[in-house]
Each structure stands twice: as structure tokens, then as C-alpha cells.
Length: 40
Image 1 (cartoon, one colour):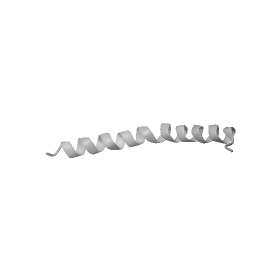
Image 2: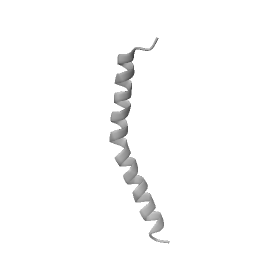
Image 3: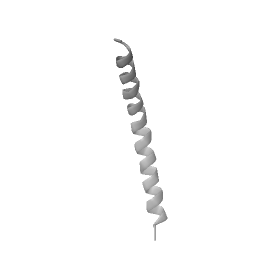
Image 4: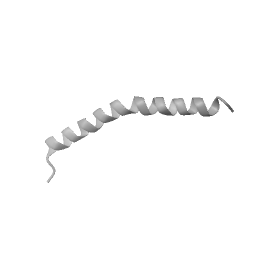
């Protein structure tokens, strides 16, 4: 049986991680596109 409180904590932690990581990942992808499309 799944403990709902642990489940909620887990999903909250996941969302926290996503909100922290997503902008960083997006910035890296943006940078990659800029550098790869620039010289060519």
C-alpha cells in the first residue's frame, strides 16, 4: 500500500527539481542552437 503523504512529498520534490533544472536545460539548449547555427 502506498503512503499518500510520501507520494505527495515525492511529487513535490520532483516538481521542485523540474522548476530548478528546466530553465538551466533550456538555456543550455538555446546556447547550443545559437553556437551551432552561428558559424555556418
